[in-house]
Length: 115
Image 1 (tube, rainbow, N blue to C red):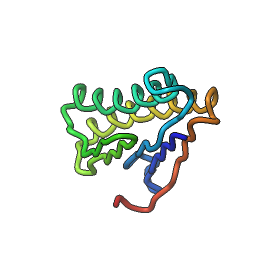
Image 2: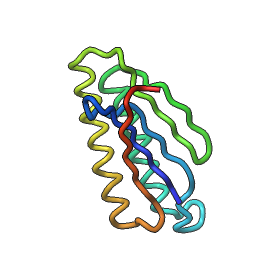
Image 3: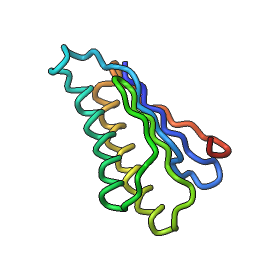
Image 4: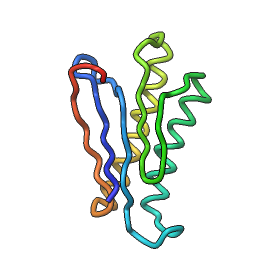
């Protein structure tokens, strides 16, 4: 199963970090539409943030894992743009979960401060 964890700051509700881990096992490798969808949405969002805002997101990616942190020293306008892109990602992942919840779970956590 794929686990997606979104960490939101308690004070603002802003997304501070997210991680995607695991494998859907919906179908054989290369034919797994759940894995492909989650990967396209999450990696595509990171790429969109970097291209559209010029902000390189600190991230780690290896087989079955994507961890991303959102910098906290951003100008307000840039932060707002990044949050909009991240919220769009959450909407898309939620739609995947609604259709394929047996293979992918989305969890949102409230954190007091950035790690």
